Length: 390
Image 1 (cartoon, rainbow, N blue to C red):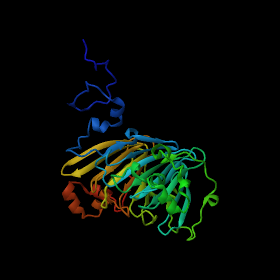
Image 2: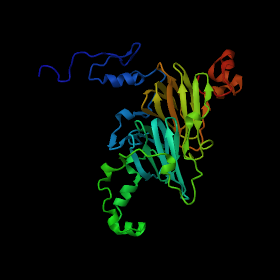
Image 3: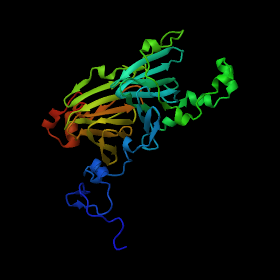
Image 4: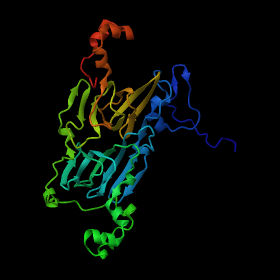
């Protein structure tokens, strides 16, 4: 063979791993679309240093499991090994599609991204819960609470699920159809008080026929509700997050939700952050746990400082998951031309962060000047309240 079999005509050569007089062009095989999405990995900023684990994984490269009523794809500790505290599932339910009756050993926190859905649950005292949710609403089902989700009219729904264990897998949930299929028929007869023959038609191939499966769009809630003799659950498992008044900032806004304003969410705290083009989710860190991120809209650049002279920069787009280990300082910059919208989630009952700006502003001025060699004008510009988005 006269030529190497992988040699082709020169392709578009941007971007290149070059900064000033350092680096060089790529001569070998390339994945240009992927490189264009990650320019700060291709040519890291000069402020990056040392070795830090990968802090990014995209749902676009996650395996998608298909059902007759929709699909689901997950990012767990398997896909993003550093993410030990939380795992996420992106799920789609078609019109009438069921996420069947099930429960988890982990808590499930959900954010509706598009469409409408109906959720049901049973609390530990045997009281029923049912509600309809739409884009911008959230829910939380604590560990062990049985529940279901169903896509409603129009085109069903899509949502994000966050679980309070990084090793969680959507494929390991406790499904009612799976449980009954693995229970002897005579036991089912004794348990439910009907002849064993009543269970002759249980789903045979639960893996493909249930889990997420097609169904008819339900009627109004009051027509569908099955009242418990103990009454309806006083626990509100859903929350209308977008109806919550945001914290306005110079460069965007923040909505924080945790156990203080959504008591059902006792193990997962979160914030929806909006950053306007060119603005910044300020330099900050979290004192309660690792941060799990989901990017909903726009493009972001994040540099994570890991102490000991180590830092690394990543680029994110809608559909990506980011992660910041406990205590590491970071910022998120909107590098696109539209608002950046992303979720910050934590395995914690309450949201907590520290602002580098506020920290310096509330430290003795001479101390700050001695540490950083800055002048009085810089000191005067510091904010004694958290800027959040600048």
